[in-house]
Image (cartoon, rainbow, N blue to C red):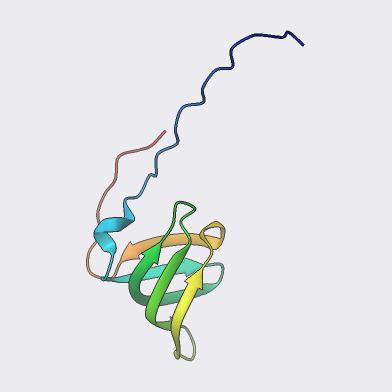
Length: 90
């Protein structure tokens, strides 16, 4: 290992999806086998989501209220009304 060598800076990772434009709007989130609809009230850099007035959709719909969904478990995210195409990030 060489000493006194400057370390390269890693390029900053950018989020593929800008969640700010969906704040306080109804969204649909799939996490594993669950589908949840609710109003997006918060998120962080790890894409953890906070939904208010959340309800799980499935065989039996059920009210969940305020819900936190971990970003690593999200398989799909979409606005409740309409869709938006994003540029291929790769």
